Amino acid sequence: MIFTTLLLALPGLFQVASSRNVPTPIRGRSVQVAAAPAMPTSDLVSDFKKNNVSAKWAEGHPMQWGTEDKKYTYPIPLEAYDFAAAVSPDEKYLVMINTTGSKVVSLDTGAVTSNPTFSYQGSGDRVILVSAANNQYDIIRSASNYSSRTDRVSRIRLGQDGKPTGDVAEYDGRFSSFEAWPFNNDTTRMLTQTDTSVYIYSRSNPSSNLTLTGFTDMVVNEVFSPDGAYVSTASWDGNGRLYDAHTGALVHTFGPLNGQSWITRFSPDGKSVLVTTNYRAIVNIWSLGNSTAAPLSLGPYDSWVRSARWSPDGSLLALGLSGEMFIYRVADMAVVQHWAMEDRGSSEINNMQWLEGGKRLTYRIVGGGVELYDFETNLKYRWGPGDLDHYGGGSVEGSTFVLEKRGWIGGVDSDLKVRFWKYPA
Image 1 (spheres, one colour):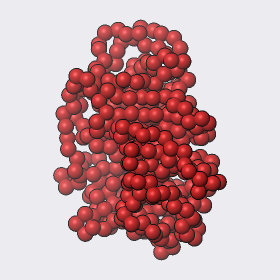
Image 2 (tube, one colour):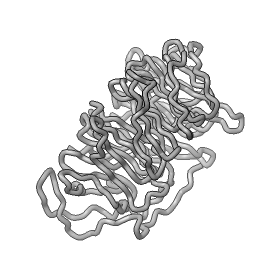
Image 3 (tube, one colour):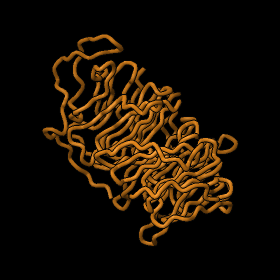
Image 4 (cartoon, one colour):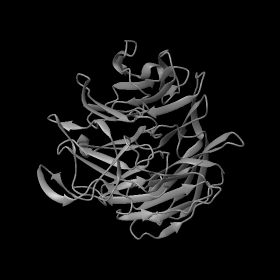
């Protein structure tokens, strides 16, 4: 359920930009500009740094809702308490869903092209829009019906015109949590889960699947390796597991880890796998070339690690905690960046994405807007709620979109609207 809250500036939690002129660095030089409209930003005890100099706000930042270049809304009926959205890989279409329906919008014209209907009625917690054959698209929605205690992933094929073709399919299970990408490298195969099973489906054939078993408690996370040969899982039975993605056979068990496991990720080269555990908040990394050896362990931390992202070349590893981020240099696992809020409770970091080959990192603080740090210029950017904006205190899976062809950045905000701003040059 979405709770709407009036966000107020609280001492020690937020700082608000003033309306007077302030010096703002722009790509290495400083000019006088008017401060951005009042906007709550986190009080920090540790900020991003370059050469031991703390990061500064880019010109005009932080920016607030109302300054966006594009905004898309989908009225939420009283009985519809969830919302999710996705953009097609070619950046032509935006799809928005709630409990009762969906809306497909052309990003070229802003016109609604269709309102597809899913036969399975449930709370849609995630939607993904992927390419299909003949320049078509698949809307893929993960949903749960809590009354019937069932889960379903549904697929609706869209034509080039953004309208349903009549090709639909359903798959047992749901997508996992914490931003795990459910597809292999070419999106022909797909991962779903129930409480204690994981399924590997052919996207084109719901009857073609493998079942991964052996879990004795809730499965939380599962991902394909970069080459699609393996699947790694994390579950509350305190183990990480590695499976053969083509046979479903268990290859190796990482653990026991003395606590619930939360997320798992492969390194970009597929040679290492990461599993986090809530016991003393540890991140364990195994080399797949010697999976029986003891893992490299990072931590302990002050809160669970439920967001992790390697840079595209694998040289850096970003970890998101509650109100805190660590960025490690993988070669020696030295901490090269530490970002931390003064008040870290219930401020989980999520939606981390490396941009421009690792030169920039974007992320969200739960309930807040999109933030971005540029490692070369040492500048920060933010697009989010102002100090008097209403917003729901939750987060949305996959809610940050960077549209490179259009030069847009934004996504699903916590007031359940989709906004885009110009991506900073």
